[in-house]
Image (cartoon, rainbow, N blue to C red; front, side, top):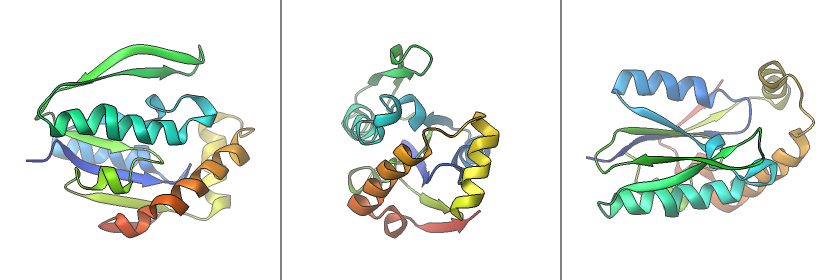
Length: 158
């Protein structure tokens, strides 16, 4: 059985966290949030690599995965987290669906929505969106490098 039951990827404000929480409840799994793996607002690519090398690779080798979660308030790596082989996981966040991560997932979903809808959701969620353009550039780079919609079993408009 795959430890990673599902990967949910998409741009900011597309509904990844909500869907991941619903899937985890349905599957009896834990959610791993990419927000905990990004090294701040410049960290999308770092988060993808941490997921691939620090979590998925050890689990695939039958080893415990141990990583530190990003502390957004402190702007530095914070508490340790871990997953054990056989743990049931749903991974959500932009940058989670890559060529390297796809082979570890039983299911992969890409979420999409118009930018104005996503931005309004992000503003409602975060209270500000000064980071929007910086983050969109990183999302664009992730999409150009990995084409996550093509890697997905399912593409949903939200």
